[in-house]
Structure formats: C-alpha cells, structure tokens
Image (cartoon, one colour):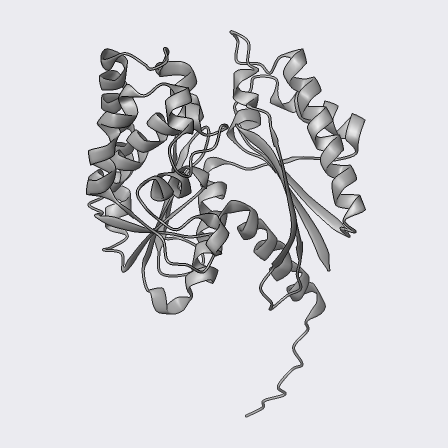
Length: 321
C-alpha cells in the first residue's frame, strides 16, 4: 500500500509518502517539507496566533493534495510539542480538521520517544543489543533505552533546539552570558533523567536521530545525505565540544555557510549542539551512530504492525493431553 505520514513539528510540516506492507521495509516515494516554525507563532499566553493557525491550515491542506496526487491510500497525521503545549491546542486541532478533513493525533513526549525507539530497533535489529536512543526536536529532547522494541525507560525533556533559541538565546550571535545560562539550564534539565536512564543498563549501542543530529554529524565530517541512508555516520562528543565555541561566535548567516547546515536549521544549530553535547556527556557517551529512521518511520511501522495483526489469524494447534 502507499501510505502518507504527516509530521507537524515545531519547525516544519513534513509529508513522507512510502510504499509499504507488513513485514517489509518502507520504501520512500516522496518527501515534501514546508518551513513553518509554528513555535514562533505563539502569543504571550502560549496560544498559537490566528496567523499561525492560518499557515498551519494551508500547510496541511497542501500536504493532503500532494498525498492524493501521489496516490496515498491512507495518511497518518500527527503533531508534537508545538501543538501539544499550545494553550489553544484543542481549538487548533478542531480548526485544522474542519477546514482540511485531517485530524492530527497529538503525541506525548514519551510517545515520541517510544515510537522513535521502535524505528531505531527495526533499523539496527536485535543483534544491536541494548539501545540508547537520543532525538532532538524543535521543542524537546527525547531519550529512550532498552532491550526490546518498547523501551524500558523513556523521557521527554523540554530543551528542543527551537524552544531554546526562541526563549533563551536572543541576539545574532547570542551573548556569552546567554550561552552560559543556556548551557547551565540544559544540563540541569538533562540531568533530571540520567538516573532513570542509567537504571536501564549500559547500552551496547548509542544512536542519535533527527535533523539536528544529522546536521551536527555532517558538520563534523560525516558523509552527506546524497551518499544514501546506509552509509555509516557518527557523532563524536569531543569533536562536537571542540566546535561549539566556533558556533557560538557565528551569526546565522555564517552558520549557513557550514557544510550540511540548511537555512532552516542554521538559527537553531548552536542550541542543538549544546543539547547534544550535554546529553552525550551526562549520559557518558563518547560516540553515537546516526540513524536515518526516526519518528515518522516509527509511526509507519506501528501502523503496518496493526494492519498485519488485523489480517493475520493463527489457527488453533488443537493440542490435547
């Protein structure tokens, strides 16, 4: 079947269309992104503004048209922290559904962590052993760890790259004082989940997902995306720490000239780097593999599992004593 997954995040509205069926690897057919920065469309009360609602409705309507043109039979549509935390989130969801026909499923932070963990487990397989998975989004950092397809522990921490940039890193470039304050704040927040993650045991493999981690890895010399998803890419903590002082001195225009840094990600790159450094250091990680699958792929896999369960019925073995 051809399946669409619509991701309404803090930065973008991203439509991924894949060809997939239960038991098979989803094959991407098309990918369409609209830069939205929904988290910037908030008023002083934390509500998404009327302008923000309009641009969201337009982006979702456009995505529906693209999915239909691509022949998608079904679309999974979800939203993360920007809508989840908006004080008028329910009203926004109702407006989007009324005007586009799409009902966005709002994921909790822990659900994001769990579904991303599923995607990473399927990518690396059971032989990877105990996994530790990190995912930096626009609004939050998700951390999950465990041996199975459902993590033993997961947590969501409100230190997303977009949130920190908007709320705590004014200026271009931001002042040294603001950077120190953010560094201290991020480490306090990340430290709050270290104990629970540590209880899950020492990981056999540490994996990072999301555009922020991919951009940072590319900045440090990882292969470009054009070389394909199966190329091994890593993020080294010490190398990242060495580059942060340079990033702190660059303005947004300067960051866009760095390898692998897109215009949409450049404003948030410094905040993302500080979150990544804190997570790796406080969790005792020297190096993380970059996984090409993340939340969207996890939702696709979850849906395919449900379809497979619905269509498969095992006959009774008829064992008797």
